[in-house]
Image 1 (cartoon, one colour):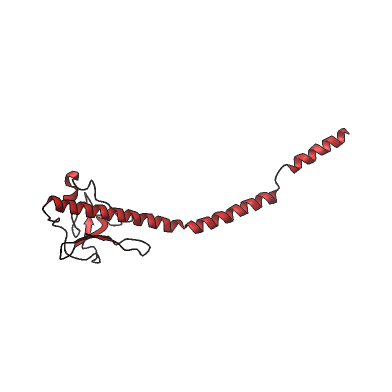
Image 2: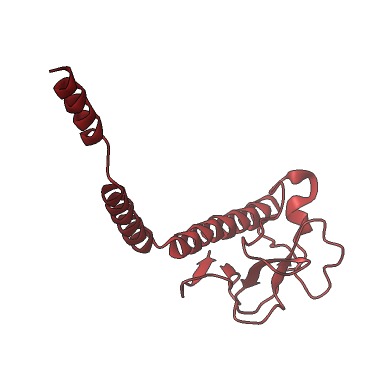
Length: 162
């Protein structure tokens, strides 16, 4: 009788664990589900959309500062803003605050001097220029100001005119 009890307890001990096959099946199913979720989420697209959202915010900040400057200066826009289009290559890119050289760039330091309109000039999240912000500013013949982000991703056009 004692022998039967010992055998019975050994069999129960064996039955309470998972087999290697069961563990491998669960790991395989989890891996497949994780791959499907990662493909569905598409992290590269999500990051690009986040950078585009930052660009929208930045160009609106710059445009608001330009217009606040104009309000405080009887409608006069910063002198550095030239008549052009956002399509013009780098001739109307905004210079970074504190940049060593603004040659060939639009110097809007009047907006950051004394931190009256901007504490610092916003910079494109993917900017590669040493001195440029990655954003462009122009004005039309009628005085409407356009700020655009030519580095927008996913085929999006990011531009605001007021």
